[in-house]
Length: 278
Image 1 (cartoon, rainbow, N blue to C red):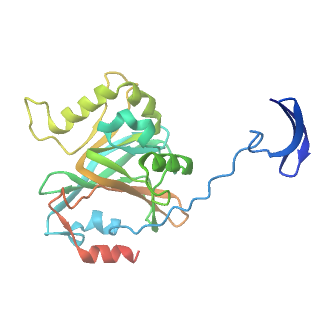
Image 2 (image 1 turned 90 degrees about the horizontal axis):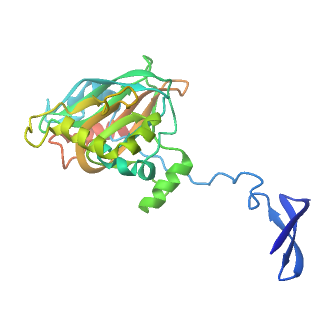
Image 3 (image 1 turned 180 degrees about the vertical axis):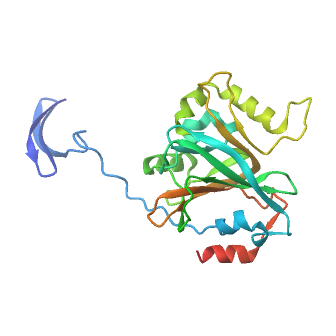
């Protein structure tokens, strides 16, 4: 088969095609010829309600969880972001980092940012974490997603509805890292998994309790990334929300790691009802 571009026509080009020595002409869209980018997919990701008010979650956890004192809030480790693009993922599933995860679509300025964690008193595990990027009040919250093409790719891989907002399952651990670290992680998958398990639960001969939130640098050199690793739960999709100021700029990121089946604390119905009115 031979083909020859003749001239632009409409939204494409008139093409002369010779197939089995029989010539004919047709008009082919420029997208199909690779002469212009494909239009963005028309998928509307549905809005979802916050499970509770993040402001109360980190200032008055007793207003969110029962029984009183079930959840304690304390400062967590600071996380270094070299590009400002954040990846949330399961560090024990890092072998599938390129297939199952992608950086959140929005980014912040590079820097070292503090965190706060909500720790379940009954299990000692983390049920929520907050990163703070600026000292401005949060005016509203929006669900954190990945770029649309990445979202559709991941949804297709897991056979989930494309309208469902991005979330991932963590099998006991969750982590946050700068997107610049993805190449390093893929090259050190086995070492990373072992480092996470030893740092968070201890070596097999020494199962002493470890802090449920740690910044881990699983490398002896300065090229290894910093990960904020959290001992969380098993099985429930993890979802995050951006806290925005009045101008729509992100000033915080809150990740929900709570699972009723794995944490002793129980969410109050009033907290959920209050969040639905946000």
